[in-house]
Length: 70
Image 1 (cartoon, one colour):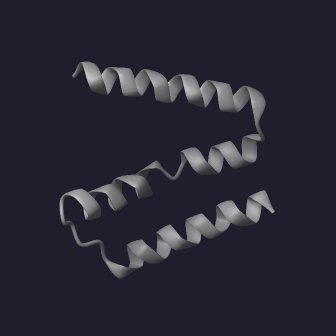
Image 2 (cartoon, helix red, strand yellow):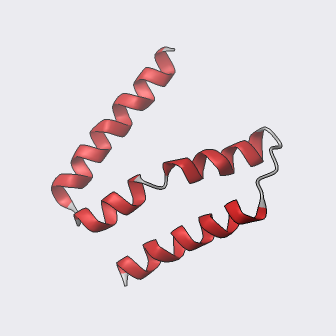
């Protein structure tokens, strides 16, 4: 529980730092990708098998990040 709390605290601090120093459009897009990271971690660590549509959605989200940064 302590580890989860520390990681959450660090994530919030990093988010605040990013909001103050970066472009909000990029930051908002990246922070909204956290469900995708959960799906990828479940696939890697727990052996979950995401449906193909989930992988397509993840790829489209990554392409959106690249397009915003360009």
